[in-house]
Image (cartoon, rainbow, N blue to C red):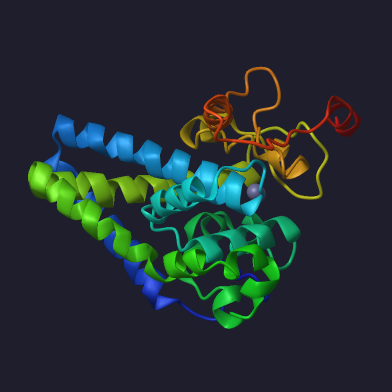
Length: 278
Ligand SMILES: [Zn+2]
Ligand SMILES: [Zn+2]
């Protein structure tokens, strides 16, 4: 595996230990299966991957492709923290850097450095932001200036503890294993597939300067994020599935929030933009 030139210097033990331990507990916990635990795992997957990571961390906080009232924004961020993918400031900064240097030197997770690197390898090594913590200000000034985001950034790991207690009291260790460890491992790979598979396989509908692709099975798994070439072409669009047959559940939810008068300023590409880039 070739490393990204300016990012990894060595294993970053806090996240490497965390990710490996979560995987091991998930794998060895699989035989505890029962149906209620399975459904809880799926419901929490939808909550944390779709509402948390996709709708909030990605489309709302990183790209500001729509807006919601601040208390709702903070609540959605708290839900995203339950995915254990880092605090909101780190997630937003890393993803904005990905868009700034997609598949070029400096991209935190390009498959040009190997599929495994783009999938999960990059999470195990020291990142650009580990080495340059001052750069959070540059990539996410809107986040670093907000004390609530700074608080959630520091505490994101802890929010699974109250959830774990509720799960334990409801269904014992089986609920904890399925509702936290198996769910988090599953959601890790859903998110990582967008960075790895959707920059490797699939079709391109729009010309971009990177390798982003539209890949139907990643789109279905990731609640619409797999229409990744569309997303790289129109980064601030709240809608990623832009063409016929490109189902995008997250966009449907954003429209639903609009009907409830919660989502506003929904950004979409114009018809002219869609045509000229084809
Ligand atoms: Zn990408
Ligand atoms: Zn993005």
